[in-house]
Image (cartoon, rainbow over all chains, first blue to last red; front, top):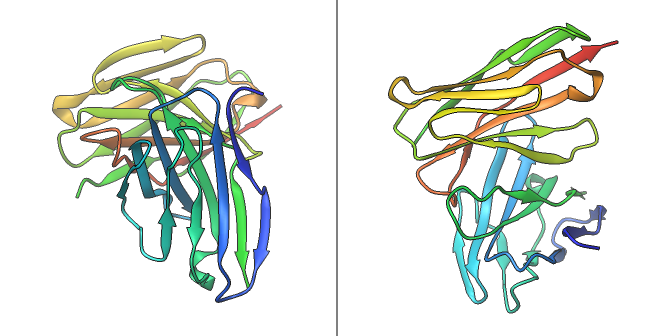
Length: 113
Length: 108
């Protein structure tokens, strides 16, 4: 199916565990983004990528790692999960061009116990 | 950094009513977008509108960049318009700063 797919939809993990959230897009968009959404904070940018092998930090990168070896995939890894990382995580992508709209995945709800 | 304020925080309307949502921002921007998050959590891009006016069906948006605000108009509201409307601004499309949103409930 065309679009942007996140997996898993729901994840429960324990404090200290490593967990990876997956994001896959079929549009060959250059830019990809990871956001977290917490009640009362809107969305906050964690990391973004302008192309394969190019990544950069956003507003709240601490505790997260990303990679982008292929244009279509942009996994987000929590190296040692903490309770403060309980959140809903959204992946997004867009084409080149300033007025290209952001397209979002359906989100991953992560709970760290 | 840029501050984004959206108002009202909550809005409850009857089906068929019109509504105006506001987004104020604290500094000059060259990127402003409106998004709708439906009750199932899906985020949909509505408008890219750093200045001027755009319309798409029952929705329209106006940004007055010199006065640092944007308005989203919804006419003849339908229950499917319910959800949270976000304004996001920035000086690039990388570091968009998001408002806290306006939660809209349309009653049948």
